[in-house]
Image (cartoon, rainbow, N blue to C red; front, side):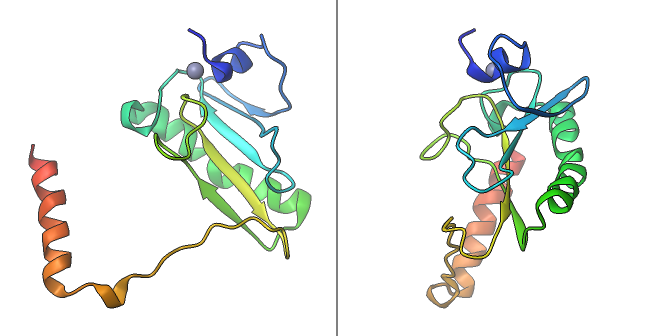
Length: 138
Ligand SMILES: [Zn+2]
């Protein structure tokens, strides 16, 4: 399989390894969006969250608090973002991964949340919930 993250896990492509266990591999994101920017990936290949097994999800997410605290201790950030892009528009490597992004004052990283609360009526929330509940049953 021609997957750059699988090659990194297998050691065929060098990486700056942060952490490794039987199921999980973590390494510095070469882009270093912020100082300490780290990727956590399952060793088993999954394209995205949509085909990630629950077992791999447990393994990958269970290491998030530990590595977040390590980054906090190492770089003293003002906070930290945890991001995972799945399919369009932002996923650039089709091997599931979680970004840990320590945040700093004036770090110029922009991730803006949008609040549309004023645009929604009770009926809109009920419609959304109905769609989710129907999908759960299917
Ligand atoms: Zn892969």
